[in-house]
Image 1 (cartoon, rainbow, N blue to C red):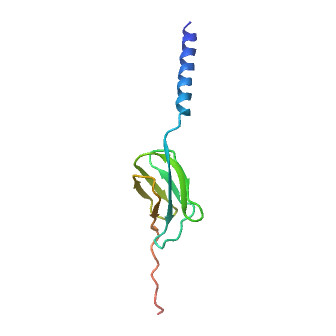
Image 2: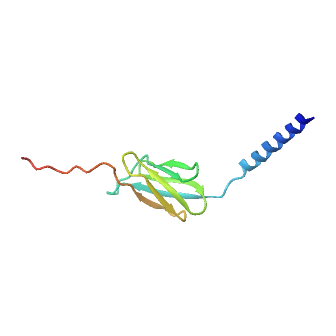
Length: 112
């Protein structure tokens, strides 16, 4: 008898989890561009909504678009050999995010 009650409990929990998983959360469209300090696009930059599983990458023009949770968010933007930036946004307006290189700039040498 206990195993039958246990089966009903498991079935109820699975049904509740399934109903919750199918309920869509409100979302808004975020968009923007990731570039270097000279305004050149950074293709393939990673854009993550902090604290969520929402992540995308920029296209060949450095542009990203994705649906994410409503309300104030923090975008975590990264690109190889560049500083990772946490960019707070309060609305889904289009943003421009500039990443700076972690590589030291070469200084030209004068011929000796």
